[in-house]
Image (cartoon, rainbow, N blue to C red; front, side):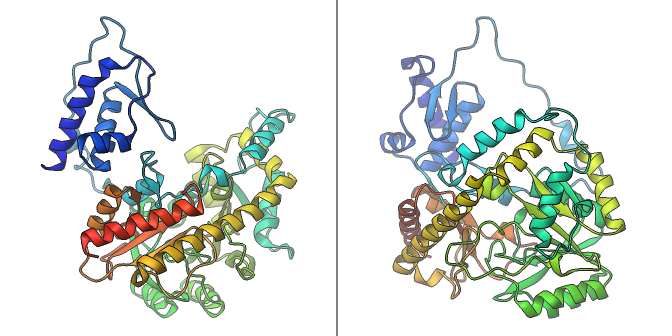
Length: 480
């Protein structure tokens, strides 16, 4: 039986059964439905999604699926409109192509309760400082003027904190060179739209974070890949790419790069700055993993921005990963006329970041609990990494590379040539574990099949190990 038929048949069966449940009553778990109807977890997930879209059930992540309140008498269903005109409208103009957010959505989607999440882009709720955040938010709400309009660039005190945090004790940055943005993704969007003209090329690492590719394409830019090896971006190829394309920006993640986890070597750090300066181009440094260092990591190199007196580096520093997906607060730093361009684009896009969030951020980073949280997070990420690596070495030793990153929250797995990574990911989902295919991480054709395995979104180190075991079974099923 094909998957669409299975989904529709299961949805029909669930609709017939709904009258047995009162409003708000919980339906059987996904695992129970899999066993009862002899279908895959994917089929169950899609059937439930169909019922959610019809307003028949309500899905609550972590709690389950519940019978939705019945519609009021006489409400009726609205006549479906004719949306076919949009196919023409969305194709008629140049530069309105879909940015391609499939890879990005994969890391943002909450899986069904019975699926172990090894593709999520944020740490599990148990790894977040929720009590410290709640206390910080409560204190922030009582600050004088907390609900008033903030300065467009951000609160001066918060900009000064980011300047010290990024520039280091030497004070290479000032508060005047910092803009507060609504998270790292917003900062990336502002940087690319400010510094690169529509239709122009922008250099990106290969592979790279799908959000970077999505932002570039949505802005009408042409991402040009520059390969990464064990020491970071290949600077010989970077120089050739600048010469061939005349690009004016290069986007990189020098620290625990997503998805490879590599750290840009000391020699190449200097080379990246020299090459970009000679090309008259900017380096957009996405420093997303600075607070995702593991407890056993060596000392971290400073950000490129701290070693750049010439305004080559535009730096992005977010607190979201380590604090909460809903604390959308980040910093965007630049020097010279570029800063004015960034400020102008940000004002047009969002006016300013809500002041209560900025005040709460100040309360959070000033709380002694913040430093304790970062130490706990570092230890927990190390434990989850070790659990994932040990399980891979037991069951799938050929997929793990020689170097294991001691920061970030993911491992980059190389599948054998000829293996269909999408089929492996689908088999993994049927086995009860979510992993991410590698294709969305490449701006051009990939050199081979990959999977990205994220261990931060799982509930525990033990669950990470169980997830890898489910992946092993899926790989065996698919012949990988």
